[in-house]
Amino acid sequence: MPAAGRFQPGVWVTGRWTGERFWVERLLGAGANGEVYLVRTRRGRAAMKVSSLAGDIALEWSVMEALRGGSYFPEPMLIDDVEGAALYFYVMEWIPGRPLPARLTPADAGRMVKLVAHVAAGLGLLHQRGYAFCDLKPENVLWCDGFTPPLRFVDVGGVTPFGRSVRQFTPAVDRAFWDLGTRESDPAYDLCALALWCVTAWVPPNLAALASQPPAVRRAWLDRALRNFPMPERAAVLRDVFAGRLQTSAAFLQAWQHPPLRPSRMLGHAGHPRHAGVSGGTSASAGLRLPPAGKRRHDWTDRVMWGAVASLAGVAAWAWGTWLHWF
Amino acid sequence: MPQPSRMQSSGGCAGRNVWRETRPYCLARDKLEVEELTAKQGVIRQVLVITDGCSNVGEDPVACAERARRAGVIVNVIGVVDQGEIGRQGQMEAMSIADAGGGMCRIVRPSELSATAQMVTHQTMQMTLQQVVHQQLLQVVGKPAEDLTPAERARVMQVVDRLEEEVGLEMVVAIDVSASMKDKMPTVREAIRDLALSLQVRQGPFEVAVIAFPGDFPGNEESPAAVRVVQPFQPQLDADALARVLVARGGTPTGPAILRALELFSTKQAEPGFADLPERRWTGETGT
Picture 1 (tube, rainbow over the protein chains, first blue to last red):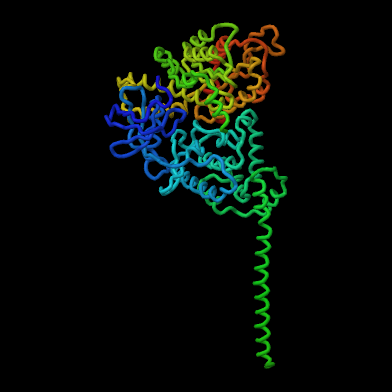
Picture 2 (picture 1 turned 120 degrees about the horizontal axis):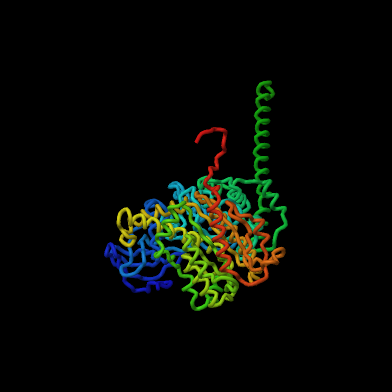
């Protein structure tokens, strides 16, 4: 019976159809339907996804082939069966990188802005081909130093053509779990997942407790968490995603990188009672920084205006004086 | 949520991996029945049993599951445990039921219930369809599934995948509501709601019925072992009816619950299926 971690490091795996041999270096990760190993091939190091489910391997392979070239997903190399065992595998590009952090501290704000922009760009490429990622959890997004772009997606298990039902997802970043929409594959589903990662990275939810609550209660939790978001102007962007006002990754990227200033909204949020928390102080100070900024700009335009008026008056006086021969 | 996973790794019993291992369905010896099932109406029928212990009232659940499979109904079992109180006997039984019912068995903690219910439904649907398509291939091309090259298999799976999205699905969710389920009921309720949410957005028709066992609740004193129908087959889940399901007194009649589910399927087949009627608005045109 095949058990978890079915290949030990150092084992040779032979393909039934190609006869190709692979040397297993180590286990990279284990998922719901199989494992991914780092292997050595005669062309170099690669990643090998192995499963006892022939169907899942075949389906994931079809998706990778559809995304071949110019996507953030690893390139597919070859598909085969394990010789002498009821195991199936495909070999793909190895992506050495670190997964996105599931938790962030307020000091990470700048880093988050950059990461989210990169993810949105990758989603844009995927959406152009008519697919949604659907299982956009932080573990499935790798930061790879030295790569361009420096961010890659792994695990095509959830990738679904638009219009179909989503069948692999993670509650923390699932639109339907948070009562924000359906579980149908569309570009907004991914944007929602990305926005949910932003929120839950700051304020970790107790998912086990929320899972026994009706969806409306989960949504109320999310609204509270958003109020504590340390970047108020970007919280407004996230709110737009949750309300379905931002539907494409291009629109989201634009709004995320140039968040519109909404003074009235931000004043409204500054007025809310704040919960004691890590991010509470930061968001309060971020909210308070705006009025002085506005005042400074006011002073500057004032000076320009009065300067212009004064010089105009001077020029006019000089012109009249010359005209009337006072000088 | 790092806590549940940590508990999982330390608290599981020695045989946990065996139960969590993906169990391929056992339809190999019933190919004829599967074929008959889909040829007849292109509908997949499943029972999902959610329980936390051993059956101790009524018919043998394994025999009932066997009957279900013969009738073309797949039985999946999910055991919900808090700290492994289901015991070896409960695990053995859950596995035997799923085995006899041609389905899958998983033992999980409440927080994993929602994801597990959906995974189990998806995988058994996929396997049923895969079986049907392979059977067709064997007849048309004369090639057994094992002889397909990976590239051919990928193409077959694309067909299976599309079928899974478009095929009709009828599902009976059978919930164990014995006293020990009390603390888990809110999670179970939300998990069922979540499952329906996922299945409703499929392109194919979907109908769900919910039954609860034991049925000993106020107003049903005369037959306490009876299984209670929370909602008959409907395209949507009745969240209010589900919210009214409370823990009942009595044993765990898992066998009778499976039989009740089969009854629901057969009465549904007897009456004309409204799922076959078009959803479009009739604007007065006549003729065929």
